[in-house]
Length: 142
Image (cartoon, rainbow, N blue to C red; front, side):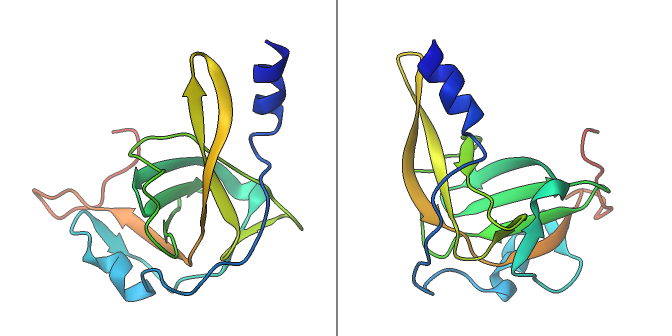
């Protein structure tokens, strides 16, 4: 039990290392028809503003921040270790989560939580979810 509690205490922590520039670009964030890009991509998010994250697939994570904004991150390369709705962990240095830093899948092995393989972050693109029927923006939680 102490090991699980210790891992939860370290969930915001992970190692930070640069990776190659092979991932999707800002323009590719707009390929998803269920979102609308609302501004220019940024390299970092203030860690104090991140309130939750959601793995969309093996190469995409949405970060929900205070104020109701959402930033989509296309990882710098595919990350088959990340599956839809997986939990992730990462380390914040200098108060920001930035492009090139590593996020890790959290694996559950018989009730034991362990840090899984890591994947490098790309740019953070501001998005809003779009209702595919009416093309009106959706609000999270509706």
